[in-house]
Length: 252
Image 1 (tube, helix red, strand yellow):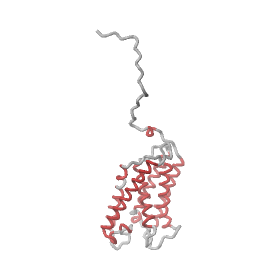
Image 2: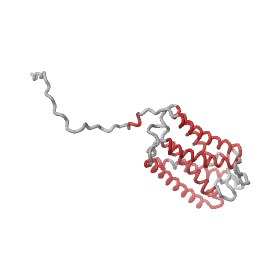
Image 3: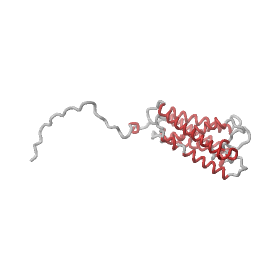
Image 4: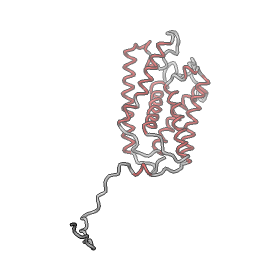
């Protein structure tokens, strides 16, 4: 036989201390619905328009096959696509693009800008992506395109990251993956040079990666140094992203 069920259940002693809450598997920020940010969308749309305009102008001034082979042109196309998608998501209150995509885009654009201003802007003969032998005149097509792709849009991308993007979204594990595209570009660059006639002045697009002048050993050494500098810049971006104050409280 079973014991009868008591009609009254005695009071249980109170649990000492505050209740213990188990950590949630999903952060609270992941379930906060984003809001429409039309001004953010407008800024990103204008950035995408500037990048696309710079690429289009460069294609009109030079040979498309040569122009599309430049790292700066390819990153300009990538920036236009990413900014346009980010603008659309900010306008429609959708989740932002993954940080691995936006972080990689920012890294490539900054690297292209730094390489231009540090190594190409003051070379002799002057650096152009159109193959012109004359010095690009200020405020004219070729010069304006270089400034759009290597000054205006990189600054806009950097301001978007600093002022319009929540902090602590980048991760150190992403830094090594971001080097895969530059490595693939180096392979494409050397394969393209091998398929172009040695007499063609457009065989090597960048003077510091000119194997005909410096040899493959020095060219690969320069590429290695550039890759290490790129990785250092990626690590710096991650560190700054985790130390800077977040400019917004919600996802944009």
